[in-house]
Length: 185
Image (tube, rainbow, N blue to C red):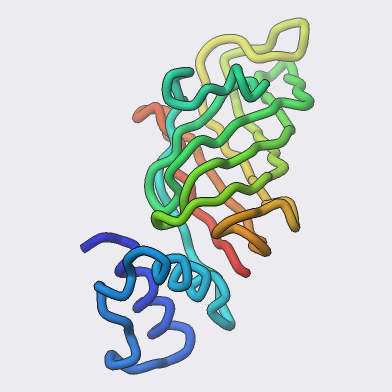
C-alpha cells in the first residue's frame, strides 16, 4: 500500500474519530483530489501530520545545488521527495571536536506526491575526529543531529501556510540522514 493512501485514514481515525465509511477510497486520491487530501491531512485537528523518510547527500546531477548557490544538497525520499538545498551561514568547532553549524535550507519537491517549496532555519551539532584552525571539522563524523524549523509563511504549493519542524539524526554506519517531524497547516 502506498503511504499517501495510508496517511489520510490514519489521520482521520486517530484525530477526529471517524468511521471506516468516512475514509475516501483510493480512487479519490488521484490528481487534483490528492492535493485536497494532502492539505486536509495537514490541517487535521488537533494534531499534526507526521512525516518521515531518508536523506542522502545529492550529486550535482540530482540536485543542481551549485546553480542554486547552495553549499550542498540532500536528496529526500519518503513523505518528502525532492532536493533540500543547504546554505551554511555560520560554523565553529571546539578543540574536543564538537562542531556546530547554522544556516538555511530550501526544499523543492513533493509531500506525498503534491508539489511545493519551503524554507527552514537549521542548527546542526555533531562530534568529529577534530577541528581545523578555521573552525571547520577534520576527519570522520562520530555522531550528529540537527533541527530544522520551517520558516513561517515561506511555503508554497502544498506547503502554503504550513508550520512545523524536521529533525534528523545522522546514521553514520548507513551514511544517510533519517528525518522525522510534523507539519501543520
